[in-house]
Image (cartoon, rainbow, N blue to C red; front, side, top):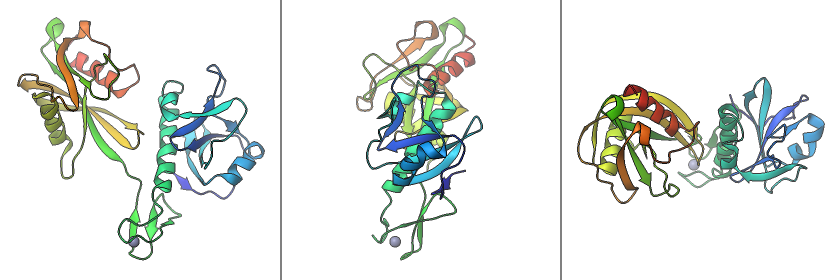
Length: 275
Ligand SMILES: [Zn+2]
């Protein structure tokens, strides 16, 4: 549970997500014992006082975790304000999720100063994470954008294949599973079938849910599936997807690293195909 604007810093040592824009204060030495600052109430006093926004955002292995959103990059010996994305492979998924939450909460507060309905100033709600317009009685919550991500497979055993695509935003040579945002009034299954068809011209069936992962760039929730090929020739849309192809599991191109939901969906499809 998120506790907005706690009055005082905790007495005990806590982990601090010190956010400035899309950057998080993290250790500069790669091998530092603590990647994120762990401070007691005395050490954090000045930062706490000068933070533009504060919230308790969770716990990590029994240690409380706090967000301090700052107007300027903070200077702390051994630490530097670096992009959130750089934390991805430095901490485990639980701590990264908390860092992502910190950035999303800070982004929400900073981008919701005025009512989108009547233009008056908004006030923060104290009992939950939301902002409220007193003039038109309108409450706004942090935005979360649902997104499907899917590994499409066909065949069985050694001849089984997976459909991978090189997207317009991918680094050169990288192929991944397909993904896209859910539209208003659409089920996840409809979204999945539409995205796969639009991007590659392929129809799918046997859609199965695998797992989900928050993806805080800036506020997506990736919902991961596998789906079996039904029909159609692969035709990249040339817009979102520049190239797409079937690959056997023992001859995959460069794909996203372990730990990403894409890598886990490729593994799930491999298991489905019995190879
Ligand atoms: Zn309003």
